[in-house]
Image (tube, rainbow, N blue to C red; front, side, top):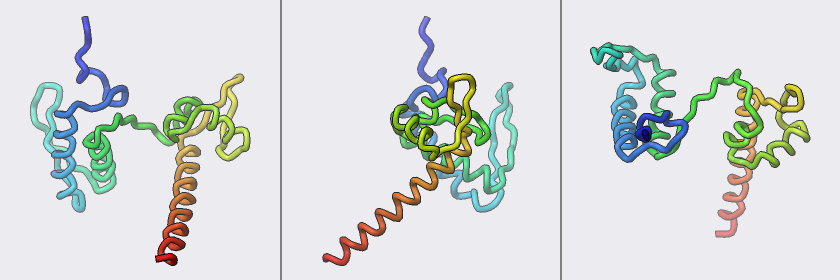
Length: 151
């Protein structure tokens, strides 16, 4: 017996066209109300409507999640305190595992050893990613300024 694709969690597969369309529609609706407290009507297990009020922070998180799903990306939620394997960390950074290991060996990202295995706290990985992205952004700005000087 095969399991329909929609039965698998989104983090393990790409969203279908229908799921993408629904995510984009829901994101638009939520974005209109995100500045205030957004009230959502959801269905509980018995398919009865329940109203839920979201403050701006969870609304923004949900909007971001829906934006990724609407763009066709698989999405996984990772708590900042979670310990990640080197493969999980490499996947989140979109780099190879050997490259991540070299970052760990150069102590660019804090990690711990569990037996022979390296583990990276998600918050340390995200801090590295923010710093890396900021550095890339600065380099891009410098290149853009240099290009503009030659126009």
